[in-house]
Image (tube, rainbow, N blue to C red; front, side, top):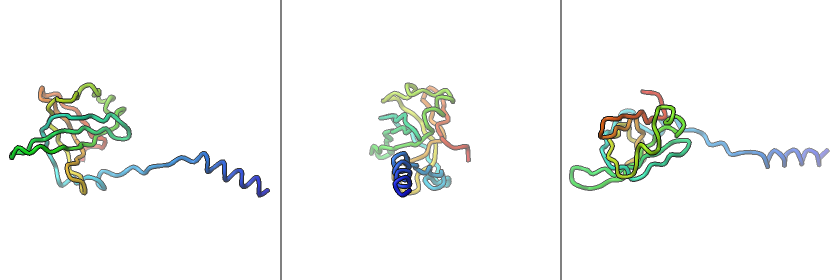
Length: 128
């Protein structure tokens, strides 16, 4: 009986998977700190559970800051008509969203607009 119990426990332990908790928007980002960024795409991470667009933003004093902007996962973005190829490195974009609570130069996007006027809802959450 003990051998059977040990085998069952071992079997469960070997088949267990790690479960990562998904954060809430309010835990990571501050709805009271809207941000509007205009910059150049330096990288697009088309990954789950969240896509990230990285942009170089030039401040009024000429200093360039790197921003990481979180968005929805690739499947959600594709359902909205967006493709990874829509944002090649070097393209200029306008991002609206909300600053992270505890991280500098990190934001959650609401939308991303290309300079030709094409706008995408990039957020993984519903409108606040």
